[in-house]
Amino acid sequence: EHEEQRRYYVVEHNDLISKARQDLTARELKLMDFVISKIKPSDTNFTKVNTSMYELTKVLDLKRNGKTYSDLARNIGDLRKKEVLIYNKEKKSVTQTGWVSEATYEENGQIEILLSSKLAPYLLGLKDNYTQYLLHDTVQLNSKYAILLYKLMREADKDYGKKKTILSGTPEEFKEWLGAPASYAFKDLNKNVLQKAIDEINLKINDMELEMLTAKRGRKIVQ
Image (cartoon, rainbow, N blue to C red):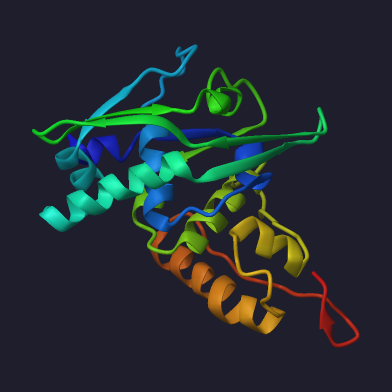
């Protein structure tokens, strides 16, 4: 049953992938994907997602113990506190919101999670300009950089694997997309973020084989 749940699709508006600025950990990103995978295509508003500590540990492939349970509760709490900024190019506006509006924990391990209503335009009733991927894929990635790069590559794949997918940007743009430290020079970004993310994706995601190409202006990497 839990293996089957990993085969649920996570469906997000592209703005939530490439135009959102957030600072979630790998565990928090996976929790959000888990909750989003529970949304039905017919849903017109958010309802409370009913789950349990047991289900979360099984689907997210975590050890079942007291520390994991307390860590998960803290992670869900952080999803309520942490903000996300989503830029809308058409409206030239920025939406500032949290991820989770409320969460309830019961003594028997049952959990109720309600997403922030401000996320509704980016998760409900999506007809175009969206990306979908299997929950299974992000669950098996350990690094937040690998998870975010994976999502960006899925978004960039407009031909569903029929042609080579290219994600192009400046080092500054990649730092923004992946939430890497702004102080990183390219050598740090390459060593600590990009190469590790690429290696993990190539190892664990069956239908992706990434390679990085760079362009210089003088001695500086610009693309």
